[in-house]
Structures are given as C-alpha cells and as structure tokens.
Image (cartoon, rainbow, N blue to C red):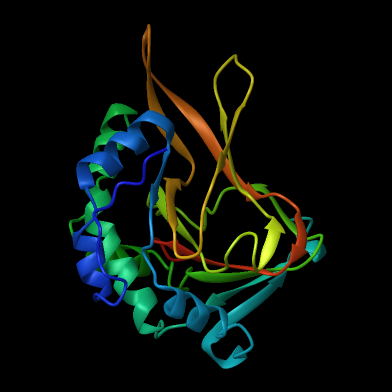
Amino acid sequence: MTAPTKTWPLDAPIQSRINGIDQAELIQQLDAQGSAQISQLLSPAECMGLAQLYPRREIFRSRVVMGRHGFGRGEYQYFNYPLPEVIDLLRNGLYPLLVPLANRWNESMGIDVRYPSSHAQFIARCHAAGQCRPTPLLLQYGNGDYNCLHQDLYGEHVFPLQVAILLSEPGRDFSGGEFVLTEQRPRMQSRPEVVPLHQGDAVVFAVHHRPVQGSRGTYRVNLRHGVSRIRSGHRHTLGIIFHDAL
C-alpha cells in the first residue's frame, strides 16, 4: 500500500502536512480497500508529547479498561473538551479531505445522509442530537494486550471514516501489535488485512461499511478493526473519530 503523501519537513505546521496529502490517491485507496495510509503525519516529538498525556487524568472524560468489558486487554481514555491543540487541528484539517468520499459512499449505498463541508458544522449537528461527548481517544497497550475487532459507533450521527495514528515505534518500543482490518462480504468469507505502520503514520479507514461494485451493482461490506497481541513493550495510539457520542 503506497501512502498518499508528499514529502514535507517534520517541523512544518500540521496544517501544512495535511495540505501536502494527495487527496486523489487517498480516496483511490479508500475506494479500493476501505483504508489508506498517510506517512509521517506527526513528528516523533509530537508522538511522544501525545503519549505522555496519558497519566493526566484531568484532560480526559473517561477511562476504559478493556478486560472489564470483553473488549480485549489494555486500556484507553477519551479526551474531554477542549481538546489538545494538535488533536483539534487534525480533526478539523482531515475532515474536509474525506467529506467528498463520505457523501459519495452514502449516495452509492442509498443512504440519504449528507455531510457538511466543515467539521464544526457536523459537530453542531451531533450536539443538536444530544451527541455531545468528544470521542478522540488515547490507547495504551502493554505486553500481552490486544484490541478485539470492533466498530466505533456512538449514536445516530456517524461519520463513515476515522483515523488512527501510531505514536510508538515498532521494533523499538514494542513488538507485535499490528493494526488489523477485516471486511465481511455478503455470502463470502471475511477478508483480513494488516496495515504496517511506523511512528507518526496514520491509517484512515471505514468506520462501519463501505460500498463495493459487484457484477450485479453496488453492495455494502461491513468492516471491523482491532490490534493484534502485543508481544513485548508498550504501544500508544491516537484515535481521531469525527462524530461525538451520546
């Protein structure tokens, strides 16, 4: 999988890095396989700074220990508003790149919902429906931890794409812990895919389902995502979900 990026210095502002993303290539990959990579979206220093936020309980609204709920092993925390600046920049900057595809996917699947051009307008829609709790999250895994296959659906209003950014470096900070996607196709066996990521890399992927063109027209495939077992070390990930939760 080729990452749809241009080359930029890592000290460039985040919005400049977002502006350097090849939108056409990003959309082509998402159409073809339901996911796409963005190389070096965050610098090592930004990754380290975000990972080091984990102990600061006051900036999070809730903490989830996965084993208590059958979600896997490990834990994560949802940020509270106001979001850290880097997360707010990512949420607002990446959303416009994905809106055209989100609207086209819904049209092709016969879903009436259309998304506004700015993330602020979409969040206002969520909040008007009572979905007021922020959903960006920081995940922390240790040796033996994993995340079961799942979907991040938090209410009626769901933006169909989300982003995960690896904050740790494979082979140095941890081993194992691959990002995994599965695609459940009608009357067929599920298709798995492992997405190779390095520190600062992002993967954009479908939250719930996506359209696929078949011989008899367009049909929906159902996607889930998770993380394989950590074999050693510690792994941190930033999750950017564009809809808020009830």
